[in-house]
Length: 506
Image (tube, rainbow, N blue to C red):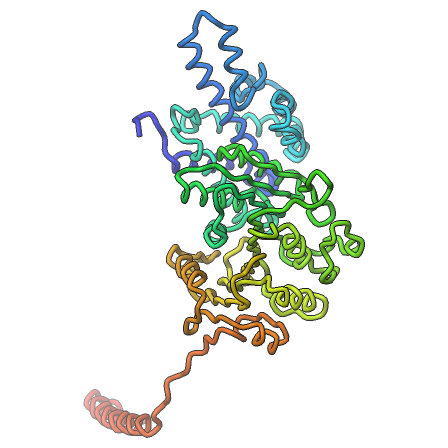
């Protein structure tokens, strides 16, 4: 790395320090959008300036050629819309208006690539206080991102992923500090790692996350293909996200990680699935994976009976628990030949009765369920409850279901527990060998599951009971008598000492 380059830690620290401008004034659930959007604007502006300087040095006498070549870059930034244009005007009134206008101009100039990405984010908002306070906060924010320590030019940073990693770093910190509201769109990296390894995405695969949040799980699947196929980017990423500002984060996150071959839609996946084929049916994917909101209330029960996509033929999930709504949707979007699916669920999905029990029974009888993996508690931001991963496959090679109890092997943390690389590897190895392991895994037949009334509660299959060592009562009695004799001797010696010191026996 050249002397003038900065490393990942320096960028992370500088970006996190920019949050100090908001702390104590605005809730993190609000200011995360401003910070993450400003990082995106700063990055594309620095890339733009880097390329402009390079072309200006080479074609100093040909301004029209420079303009034409700049127009072919990844992002077009109109006049007066770069971060540095805003920075130069930071002491003037109207920072919020100018930033919004710049973002709108960039959106317009880049057509479908950034269409509507900034429409749910406004810097000219009363959430930042009255006009003077808002202007001061935004001036400080521009100054925070304008520091030399946050030079994001490719010639300084050296790698696009450094910026993408800083984005993920911020999202993770916001999830940690904001609790459930931020946790809704962030899957812990080790859980994403585990899912992406187990699902084995291949070159040419289409990969979908119907509750994609900020896109981290999707991108982990893409990274697995790059890792296993010499950097190949022969794959497609698809996603849908219901929350507008989070959808914007996902789009920006994709661009910052260099994931150009993606389609991320904004909308409610259950009520209005946007990933459709030309005939209006649901698209099918080789890999489907998600960490949907746990037991979502008001998921769309009222319209499920008349679902035009036929997703709820196995049963309609309860009105106040949408877990099986997402599972049913995901099942119907698997490719009939190559489809495999991994979904994170709360443990209730494994054993709750009534309609959920009927849906679960049909999925098992159709031989779609492949593996149940129990995870440790306190892995997820905003909830301490343990979760499980369900793996489904369209073309299974057997009729058994593998149960893995990975709940007791983790690295403890004060607020969050973590899966270590060794913990993850053990799950992966067990998944691949598909064998019963003492106190860790069990390969159950469909009859065994049927005999358990299709209850998938992991302790019914994986026996983790540790027998207590038998107590030798005779040995304990002998030891007790010996201790009593020692105590009697000590009592006698103590009496003698007290007499010598002039204390009378009480």
